[in-house]
Amino acid sequence: MLEQPAAVAVWRRPLVPFAALSASYFAHIGFFNPYLPLWLKSMGLPLFTISLLMAVQSATRMFAPYAWGVLSDRTGERVRLLRLCAIVALLASFGLWWKAGVVWLTLVLLLMFTHTSAMMPMSEAAMAHLVSQGGSFDVRKYGRVRLWGSLGFLLTVLWAGAWFERFGMGSFPLWTQLTLAVVVLSSWLLPHLRESAGDAAAAHHVPVLPVLRQPAVQWFFAAAFFHVLSHIAVYVFFSLFLDGQGYSKSTIGLLWALSVVVEIAWFLTQGRWLPRWPLPLWLGVCAAAMVVRMGLTAVGSAWLACLLLAQMLHALTFAAHHTVCIALLSQYFPGRLRGRGQALYSVLAYGVPGVLGGLLGGAIGARWGLDVVYGLATLSSGAACACVWKLWRCAPSAGSVPPEPVGGR
Image (cartoon, rainbow, N blue to C red; front, side, top):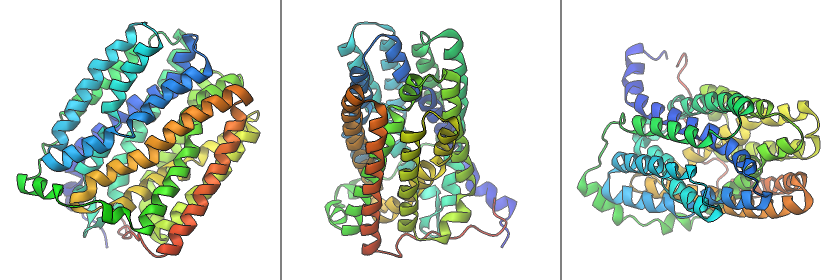
């Protein structure tokens, strides 16, 4: 059945502001996360200190998303809270200009990340009802929104790499303020979606513990934990690892960009592939791809071809994995639970493994080298495979998604 242009316009129009927020937010992340370690290195900081500072972002994910998620569930003011977070993060970023030591830098990053780490979970919860089809998660609509985030990331990771290669890392704070200013602007373009006071009050009485006691949900979070723990080797150490191997900042930016290109391709076409298998099976495919990706990076970093192949697997290890997790979360935590479900995902799948991976990876890398960190990341992705197998045993056919309409765009 062909999807009529008028019908397409009806569902696309409300999603445009969310696409703009996704683009601006990940444009900020696209330069900040890959190049923050190199900026810290340019200040003369050792590897373990850099890993401690990088772990601040993950540490905030252990409390900030859930705290903001509970507040947004109870008040229904998701969009207003999003705007507040963006403004505070921008104001805090001005502290990066003041070179007052590691403690000061830690406090600045803590304040920034406490607010930025909560933005995407609240955004996902705010637009949840807009990316549904007959009450189920519509991966096609979600992909159309999320790909704009990938495009924003791609733009800044390439541009910043070329810029820092030519002019050095001194302008890093300025890049931070410019990109966060665009995030603030895009947050004010969002429609003011406020849930009724009655719904917000009802959210307070919907318990989350019965959901967390379900074996399938427990194995889902365990699989996400080990999967992201593997990915921390990329998030925190990839730029430093390549810099230590002698690759230029432009080449580092291009390798990051390649992963985003395949990510965009996945988001554009995922409506064709995800309905073919149950979502737990897709989680297994993503975990197996992570084993290959970490293994290639660990043993083949001297060969650019190996790194190119490893980065291409990002389509599965991040893009597909992220969509599958969001789809499963929408089923495990429906309605009044969605804010807390998204927040728990940020805490358990990104906060805790981010802190452990950043701190342990920094200590291990400083002592034995970052290639050992990637070897351990390979083992962690193997553990993710085992957890997905247990999830599959609990509910082998759970989490199906509706097929993409024939001729849909």
